[in-house]
Every structure is written in C-alpha cells, then in structure tokens.
Length: 210
Image (cartoon, rainbow, N blue to C red; front, side, top):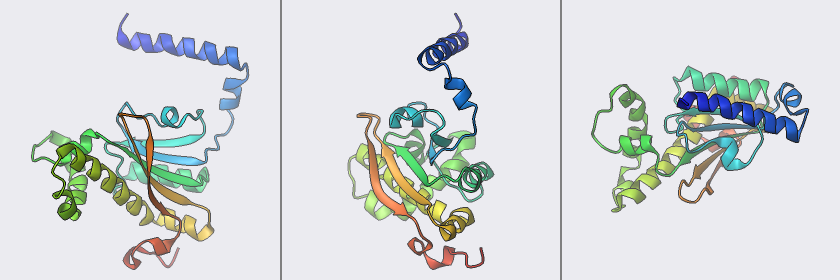
C-alpha cells in the first residue's frame, strides 16, 4: 500500500476508536472551538503541540513555521495571532522552539540553502545580537542549543512589539511565554521569559494610541 493510503487507513481506524471511546466525540469537536492557548512552534514533524503537551484537539490553536519565528512582515503569523487573541480570546501565547532545530543549525553556517535563506536571515540576526556570548561556547551542539533558546526569547519579544498583543494587554489577561522542547528526553523547558504588560519592552516599541 502506498504511504499516503496508509494515512487514510489509519485515519479510519483512529475515527472508529474515538467513536468507540466516546460516541459524541465528533459532535463535540464540531462545536465552536474555545482554546486557551496559541502555540507558535517549529514545522519540525517531531514536535506536535498536542502530543508533547498531552492535550486533546480543540485545546491549542497552532501556528508552525521553520524555527518558530515571529516576523513583523509575516501576514500568515499575524493573521493567526489576531484571530487567536481577538476572536478565540486565548489566555496564553507560547513560542516553543526545540533543541536540534534544523533551521537554527542552518542559520549558523555560511551555506546557501535556496529560497529559505531569506527566512534564516532572521535567525542570523539573533546570532549577531548575541555573538559575544555564543562564541564563548566551544562545543557546537551546546552553541546551537543556546541559539535555539535565544531565538525563542527574541521571538517572544517580537510578539510583545505587535499592536495585537499590546492592545490585548490594555484589556488585560494575555500572557506570552518562551519554551524549548527537548527531542532527546521529551521535556519542555520553560525559559522563564513571560511578558504580560507593555512595560516589559523598550519604550520605542510601545503604542500609545491603541
């Protein structure tokens, strides 16, 4: 059987199992979604948000891209953020990177990888910002892991710079977090970077007329 057909077959088995466990499972799923969380993660297939947090479908609204970036010109990301914050009324936005990230690793060398180079440029700028710290780390794996963490921290800061998040802060309740998932042990590390008010960011990035 072709591999894509196996997916369809497994889907039927999964749906049957769900109905057997709870006959109303899909009618419940068909109701209006009310997730508490927006997860901005990496496209890496080894880090599915629901699996690593052991949550059911409907609990986490998910956006994924290469290296879990928050880029101010990315209309896809901003549209997801706006919908999650202003329509779904999520309470927490989580940027979750992962150790061993291919995008971060690629950004650390001088190779051209084609069209994705423009995207990786954003990570290179994070590296440049923290160059002094990173280049004191001799072991390459450890340096990549640290850049993964620093990249998450910078993406949380990028979220805080958006009008969407700042307007939500004015209304109260929204928090943004930075986490990193470990492929080797399955554990999520909280980087203890949590923003919940405009005072968390430099004044130049604050909007006073929202």
